[in-house]
Amino acid sequence: MSSRRRRSPNRCAAPVAKVERRLWPTAFASALAVLVLAPIVVRLAGTGNDYIGHRNLAVEFKNHLALYHPHFLLQALVVGVDFVLPGDMERAMVVTVLLAYAATAATVFRVVLRHTSSTAVALTLTLALLLASSAAFLFPLDRHLYYGYVPATVFHSPTMVILKPLALVSFGYATAALWPREGKNARTWIACALLTLACALAKPSYTVCILPVLAIVAAKRTVFRLRIDWRLVILGFLLPAAAILVLQYNRTFGDDQIAGTIPGAKHIVFAPLAVMKLRSSWLAVKLLLSLLFPLSVLAISFRRARENSALILAWVLFAVGAGIAYLLAESGPRMPHGNMIWSAQIAIFILFVQSAAHMSAYFGGALTAAPPGERRRAVAGFCCLLLHTAFGIALYLGEYVGVARYW
Image 1 (cartoon, helix red, strand yellow):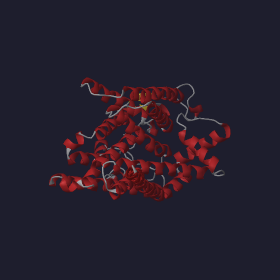
Image 2: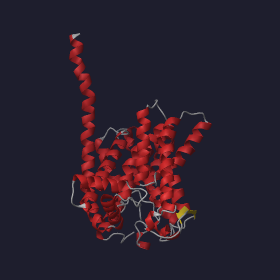
Image 3: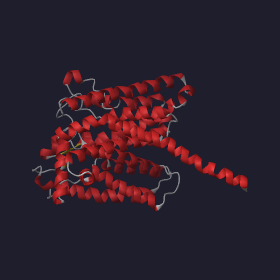
Image 4: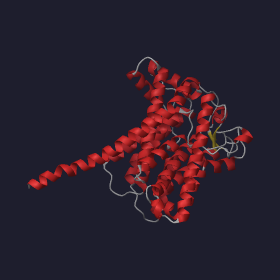
């Protein structure tokens, strides 16, 4: 009995030590993200139209409890930060966005770390993903780093920054619902439902993608009589998403159209390429240049990629998001705003993360055991990610010099 009692503290200490070993690198990844991205956030908070517009909406929310926007999570968070650090709404905006970047870094780091035992690999990929944008090789021809592409990272939209960590976690729930390994309790469904609501209130672009993705993949798995966690799908995604999207649609396209902020009739219309071609040509080439890294990861070993359920789901998500971006538009004065493109952008960010997580296994020990061809293709995939990151840094610097100067 005495020997058992002496060993029991060691058994308890091992999981705690494991958690601590993961906690510190995760905190470091978040701190590094804040350090790298703070200059551009501070810059855009004072000069970026999106930042200024949402800051003004937050002021209205604080002073008059007025909600003029159908997705108001950012304004609510800014007001909350201002309550803790009162006196400067611009500072509250900066703190809110930097906290979201920190949360994104922590989430990306943990996703990648599930596939590799190397903390250094996970940290490197996390920082690369936070900066990665489209490989804008056509810049000498049209001076665009943004228009016509589907970038995984944009710096000018604070609502997209808020959405990213929420969407990443929600995507994990979606994967667990479609490929369930064990039963989920009520707390899981409630947490997923709350997360679904939070995603829609941050920016509905991800929510309108994940619902058809769940329907498509669930239908296929049902045909082949494969297991699905229907309770998580319905209670965690379908019901809360349907409720909030109906309210947001009525608020945006109904009679109470954002209090007349943007007057004129507005509807969602089927208009292939109508928005994407407004400011850019070479759309097919730019789509390919936006997907260099995910495509290179598929090329490492397509057989192994097909066995990664999260990676396959991310590709389906991107296909739906790209369909929304390229085929749909808002009629009226909102059409040039390109709000449908956000769906493709959040989807490609998740695709980049899942592609990096899949590739990271090769750099955590599997690279030496892989065939020579796979090793070379894995290195090429990593180089493609660094290429995307280099163009992301160029977009970062361009935004710092002048907002939208090199869009």
